[in-house]
Each structure stands twice: as C-alpha cells, then as structure tokens.
Length: 277
Image 1 (tube, rainbow, N blue to C red):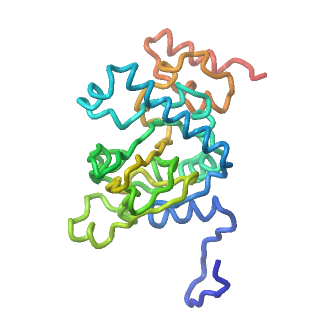
Image 2 (image 1 turned 120 degrees about the horizontal axis):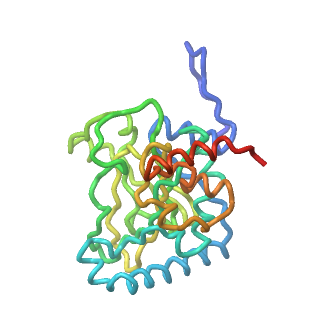
Image 3 (image 1 turned 45 degrees about the vertical axis):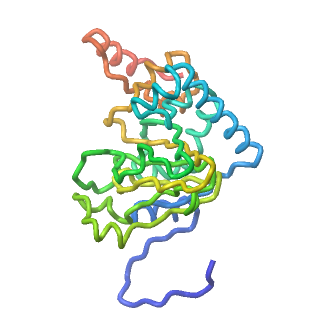
C-alpha cells in the first residue's frame, strides 16, 4: 500500500475505511464491485475443487446427461450446490462475505441462490457471456443494494480464461449504457483462486471468453433482502431437517416461507409469540 498522503481541500467529511470489510463496502458502494480474499487454505480449495467436479458429473448423470442439459442450456451450471455437500453450505456462510452483505443490506438477509458456473474452454460460448444484471429485466436504482453477488473464484480469474467483465458504477443508472460507452468503460476483473468478486447485483457484467484449454470454474452466491423470492425455494428443496443451526436456517429462508393457507399463516403468528429459550 502506498505511503503517499493524498492532498485535498474543501473537504469537511470523509468516509473511513479501516478494515477489509470497510474497504470492500466502500468500494462496492462507489463502483459496484470489489475483490476480497476468502481466507481459504490450499487443502480447503483442493477439497472444494474436487467436490465441485464430482457434483458436476453427478448432476449430469441425474438429469439426463450432458446433452440433455445442453439442450436446455444448463450443462455449464450446477443448481443448489449446498444441497449436495456441506462444504458448499460452509462457503455460503463465509463470515467475511456475510459481514459485507449485512453492511450493505442490513442484518436480515437471505441466500437467494448458489450455483456452480463453468466457463468452458477453447472459446466455447456459454450462458453467462452476455451482459446482464443478476436482477434481470430491472431498470431502476435504489439507495442501497437489494441483492449482492459473491462470485467465488474456484480457479484464478485471468484475462485468458474468461475473467468477468463489469461496467463500473452501472448500478447507479437505470438504463443499459450505449455500446460505445460499454466498450470504453468495461473492466476485466482478474482475481486469484480463493477470492470472491462481490458485486451489487444491479451492476451490468458478463463472463469473458475462455481461450485456454481448461474450464474456468466459479460458484455464484447471491444474497438478498428478504422480500425478493429465492431462485429455488430452499426450505422446500432442502427439507425441514436440513440443518438445525439457527444462523444457517435464517439465511436459507426457513423463517420467511410464504404460508400456503390461512391456517398456516396463523401458525406463523403463534410461533412468533412463543417464548424464546
């Protein structure tokens, strides 16, 4: 870090960023994204890597094979990873990521989705290569994020293997920028293995072209305020006994399931009135 002291005048207020979380939050608010070290050891990354590959193969086998999934444009995606292995639940509970998300959105957040993403080798096209927001089709801005993505780099993100492109500060404008502005302002976000690219989900971004001979793998985790519905209804998909950990249950949405009847709604009211242990 530079020891140079910035010079300025006419400034009576300045944001303080004393920690990694502070700096990430300030950067995301300013330009929409930040790269943060996930603090994983080499053996943890190796376990995640091998488990990811095994889960991808098992997903193809369980859902009609890679050709069938390619037909519906799902062959390079693994939906709901944490259902398959507790390593992925632990990834969703990363304390640095949760701290950043709660600073940006408030203490009550949900895991909206967790998907494995494969950027295929040899410049093959895939479904993340077009610019989009992860709240797609929305053209508005809000005073604070409604959803935040934490894209985990299972492999290093490089210019050659299709690192993510972002349009800085595009979470602050309603419309998609013009092509000429996109081409002049887009930024290639390179990041080391084990880091998270954390973005306001309203930032326009896309996957780059993977020109190498190896797939580039990532795990996209999106956290949202509670009133945005999950991509998959996690409590229903996982079952009521998936975990007893209170923090995990809250994050996964067990406390905010939509009642299916008036009787079920009344039961939620009774639960709220029960004394806490």
